[in-house]
Amino acid sequence: MSMVTAEHLHKVFGRFVAVWDATFSIDKGEIVGFLGPNGAGKTTTMKMLTGFMPPNAGTANIAGYDILDHPLEARRHIGYMPENVPLYDEMRVYEYLDYRARLKGITGSSVRQQIGYVIDQCGLEPKRSNLISTLSKGYRQRVGLADALLGDPDLLILDEPTNGLDPNQIRQIRELIRTLAENHTVILSTHILSEVEMICNKVIIIDQGKIKASDSPENLTRNMRAAGRVSVEFKGDLDLITKELESYAPVKKVIHEGTLPGGWHRLLVRAEPGTDTREKAAAILMSHGFPVRHIYRHIPKLEDVFVEMTRRD
Amino acid sequence: MENDARTIKRTRSYFATLRTIYAKELRSYLLTPFGWVILACTMGLQGFWLQTVLQIMSKATGEGVMYYILSNVTFWFFYIFIFPLITMRTFAEEERMGTLEGLLTAPVTTTQIVLGKYFAAYTFYLVLWMPMMLYPWISRLGNVYTSFKYGIDPEGVIVYRLADWYGAFSILAITGLFFIALGMACSATTRSQIIAGILSTCLMISYYFIGRVTELWGEFPAAPIFHYLSCTEHVSAFSRGLVDTRPLVLYVSLAILTLALTKRIVDYRRWRR
Image (cartoon, rainbow over all chains, first blue to last red; front, side, top):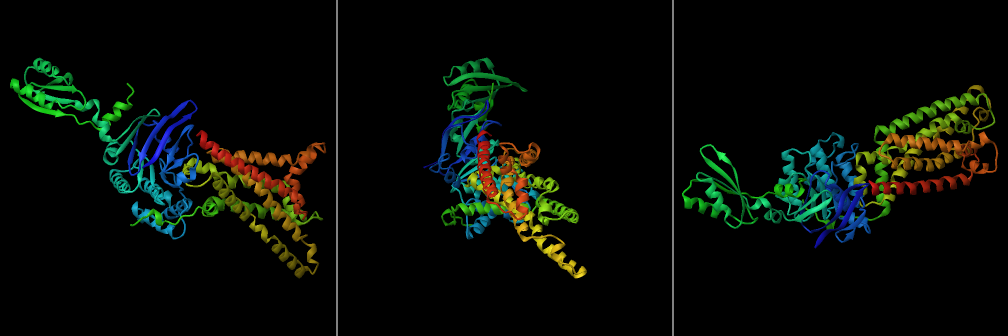
């Protein structure tokens, strides 16, 4: 069942196109990473999904409710943590969560129960009666996350949840998101690609307001240009080996990257994505009796996908 | 810890949400230095002004003390500045801090937000006039003291009528309805409190001068409009104990219009942001 369906979302600020024709859908239970360079339209897309910023054209559907026709119903299903986590500095953590819980329509004994639950989940117990203005960045971030969790919404939209945290805090938040993902749908945006590789099972890459890709990280990396590359280091006749390797069908080009001390030649073999030329390369080198010390097939990373899709050259 | 969405008690009551916003806003007036600074300044000025009025009254006679307090340019001089002070933060501060985003992405309508903030600001405004509640009691005390010390008719010392006092209170409450709404509309147009404050001060002074147009131009065919709109004339009449329902209709309808405008401004700024 799909939790979010965005149809042809457009957002234009004057002459600046922030988001152009964004169409995607997110299934229940998925953890989706929004990737893109700064100013690509990630935050704008999220703001449109939450109903804060109405789209110029197109619409989106959250848990079966249209964000324009039934904004309140749609919002009831969303837990949103905005970028930079704006909070009321003059309130105490407990007060703030109480206010937010009541705004979200929680009443009676459930207010206490929910606050207790989110404080527990986000590790806010030691700071529950502190003024928000005295909290460190990491704790502010947690208060924002706690706010998003109030009322157990089906969909969590987290805009850069780990921005500005130290590595330990990042690890904690990541673990928390992973636990939440068991029974929530999560959309998060981040610059940290390794984070997405670790926790997301779907990636949406946005660049200059357009959606460039929307797929699982495995599928995205499978068809990468970098996927078929093999590095070889050997000693012997460079021209002969280059010629023989190039005559092998999946190989597109063989590049001599240089000669290392001791007469070792380093070659980069570019081949069709999804092929493995290691065996053939080894066989060729063996048939001539040349010594080999290194054959390596590049494993494409999300970073390669990201760079390939968003670079400007 | 167990957390099941189905067991959470929820309400969809319009007024429960409104009350939540109202309570939060009122708390932020009463639990921050901001509110207390306004309160202290207004009380100081009221005290100073009451003292001055008593001096004036020792020379002039005929009207009650509330009339002398309210129908004087000096009173308007500080009265006009109260509204920008109370209202300038309402939306501008939320927008600058970014907390408006959290508010507008909660399942809350813009109307609820505007009304919640409005009633909170209005309640705080009424709190500002609480010291005036003591005036009848103070003058009673003064009269008792005078009669005790000098043995003369206490009613003649401070000319005081409860009707004046009721009138003065109701006109302050009635004009506040509109002026608070006006200040909030200004605050909704900008993310800077200073600009919001300047804008609402300008509008407030303009409205004050509209009421004095007839004093400068004399009577002319359109003059009744200016008389009808004149807040100074309303205040003078009410503080003499002449309670009239026409100003009530005027200020209530202006307040409703301005609040509707405020809601529009908040929504519009969300659209074009």
